Amino acid sequence: MKILFVDDEPAILRTIRRTLRNLPDTDRLDLEGDPLAALRRLRETDYDLVVTDMRMPGCNGVQVLQEAARCNPGGLRAVLSGYSGEAEMAEVVPYAHLIIGKPFDPKAITDLIERASALAEMPLPDGLRRRLGGLRALPPLPHLFTHLTKALEEDQSSSLTDICALLNQDMALVAKIMQLANSAFFAGRTQVVRIEQAVQMLGIRLLSSLVLQHEMFVNSPQNPNLLSWRERLNREGLKTAAAAMRIARHRQMSTAEREESTMGSLLHDIGRLVLAAEFQDHPDRGTLLEGGSGIQLCNEEIRIAGAHHGWVGAYLMRLWGLPQPLVQAVAWHHHPSRSGIEGFTTLTVVHVADIIAHGAPGAEAHLDLDYLSEVGCLDDIPVWMELIGSSTSDSAVGH
Ligand SMILES: [Fe+2]
Ligand SMILES: [Fe+2]
Image (cartoon, rainbow, N blue to C red; front, side, top):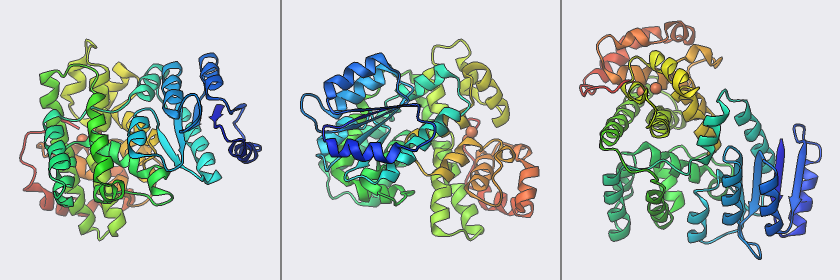
């Protein structure tokens, strides 16, 4: 693994050197105090991980990460930051996969390196990896953006519940906000699993600049068909989240587990948004949109893109630093028995909620019965179907 650290404070570079001295997997560690020299290094070497300071003389962290993204889009990028201003943070968010607070905990750096190697191990083809690493954000639905901006900009008194209800309509935006809230800059060691928590932590003003910034990432003209498909897919995410909430309550899961299951269910198909956008000119694009049964769809996606939507979603969520149980639930939601995860977890809830919430006749045939029997919840299935049944009458868009 090749790593580049950029910071104009020699003391920070010394700490980094000490922290990483004995770390396995590091075959190259470059410490650079001059940001302009760092730009030159980026053009010469494909670094797997680039970590930079924000404020430096001559050029700032945003420029360093921009160059890193241009030279090697598949690499992991993080910014070390003192208490930078909100505008600065909003500027760096599109290029950084992670924001690390300063003074930083050396553990944040070793975690980051572990994450970079975990990403390297995920079964994604190189081309797709570059595409995903270079993805600055997923575009939000324009109508949602309009509503939300209005609520944020014009009516500062909008209640937290109203704002969260608006945000929850778009899983791409929720994912971006959760990424930011879970970065060490805001959360430290606390894991944020609820959008309400994230909104409170980030504050309305930062959120508003994030949302504004978000619209600028829409780099391709919106195809109207894709737009209505995305709206349906987002509705499915909400339905799945509602189903998950009922299952989690019935199982008497703890509040934290319940929130995690709901979040995982809301975001479970985020990989589909990415694949649809990234392969919109592919001749088999229709197949990616239509769905079919979850496992069939996964097989088609592997044929077309080299990875299925569970892996793609998980890759992005891991890149963004979202909590591991969420990442795993998204990765394996169609194939839980292949996950190797034992016991009743967020994964179990997301798998079942996804299939039951889609509500198509015979959907339960796609439940992974071996896995569910292993987890010991086969007898609960009819109860959950009953609990969820009445709320799932809309048309389904697959998984
Ligand atoms: Fe799915
Ligand atoms: Fe789904």
